[in-house]
Image (cartoon, rainbow, N blue to C red):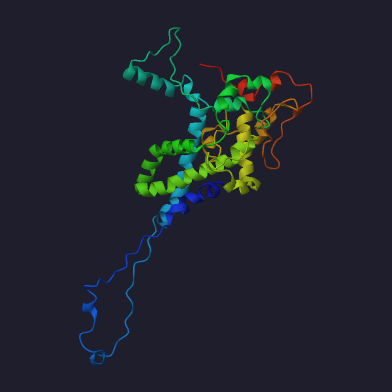
Length: 339
């Protein structure tokens, strides 16, 4: 179900474009030479001849390549989605692990960057996650976005105000950036499979568009924000019909668990796979036990989440019973200690 919904367009959109047939034309100079030299009555009886066969329209991608491209692109997109979400958006790259230490050493050699800070701590190489951490800090366990006065006065809330989607949607610029991110993996892999550059792009570009369409159909509405419009990014409306499917329910619950667990698991969103391979997938039956109560009417929100039937519901705190801890999002409570 997942592969067909996400990437069928990747093979269909550009794979079967017919080649142009070249039809011979008669010029004025050659036309007279083809006329009979004698009167028609003096010629031999005409013999019916079979018309010459023309070449059949060629497909831009053969059937074999089209079928191979779908699962291969899906795997690459799942890996890229996972890596971007975990190590860039959640800034896990910024911790003191082997990958970060590699870049510490590389910059030490290339730019004479110190390996240690004056207080002796590792001089970590850090990336800013594009507002995603702040988005988690704004999200309750029922997926609604907090809007109470105390939260609105924080720097994190203010940093999201410049984006009408508050860090939840893929703008056209972000979609372009993710497409470029795919090139270092997609180009060599498809080349090894015998794909030319244009053939690879004919699969990759529609696939990335489908990914953005699915993301923007799912993510902003599930947090109670308006659908994405065309002028901002891939619009939400083309795939809204998927909201009544098992696929949408699965990716909704999967991402809901990602928030409930403080952004520490279930990193795949539209292309589930890599979490299962790397052991970071947590099923609904497990994470639902960790759902925290959410404030009732006193907890002002940006909007009501759009959700499928049957997803877990966070308990609601009675009016006047909410404490300061209840207004603190799960992402801040479960945030890892800085290295």
